[in-house]
Image 1 (tube, helix red, strand yellow):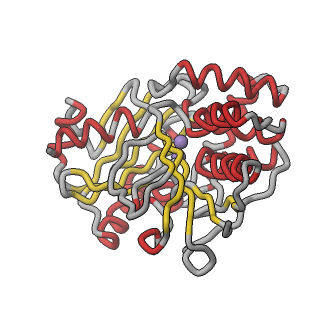
Image 2 (cartoon, protein in one colour):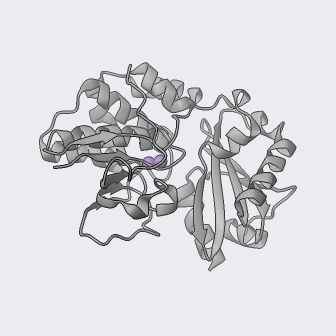
Length: 308
Ligand code: MN
Ligand code: MN
């Protein structure tokens, strides 16, 4: 069997990088020849995780068709979030926990989707089904991915399966996950070290909703003031990028990971659709979104309905 690459989405978060590593490990133990790669450099949270568990950073690729014919996708499926030359490749496997959109193949494939909090939760169960043991180091990584995606099991995306996986993985990795989890989430919120452009790029995803080209970024903080004090500069950076990349709407969700609230910077049109989606008025380019923490569950579906 020829070699395949396994990767998560562009602007990778901890789950995108970890799920690729975990799925590659599992597939290599069940007869495949795969390599986990990434579609971007690890963010500061993921860098903390890789360093904590002494794991190498995966190779970063920009395109894949020059080295392989087939690929496996984790933590995403939408082509505009995938590798740049995805149309030239055969997708043989997908493991994901997002909506399915802008995804089609010419060949039959393995596609495993579950509406759970994290790809690494699905993978924990796939290891169990395949009777492949999860090494302690990898368990630590997968635990980190679930903590990251579910904000320590507090996000509304969290399911019973995520809670069970966290307990299983914490046991294998021999870690106090609550103590470690707060340390890890804080490591991902060092916004002072990032430029305005880095802040609006690092966790951004593109969506086509109701025919509109929409960019949605998320910035995790432990103090809103870290971002609010830079608001005019960040809005200017959003405007510049929206002009360059032809985004109709650019939304930046700023999430306080300690108390599970968000604010959103809104740039572009139709702004009324954003107000309708959240039933809130935009004041000074900002929406107050108490209790909102999940882009996939509390932002994208609401915007999709409002733009319809
Ligand atoms: Mn992700
Ligand atoms: Mn994920």
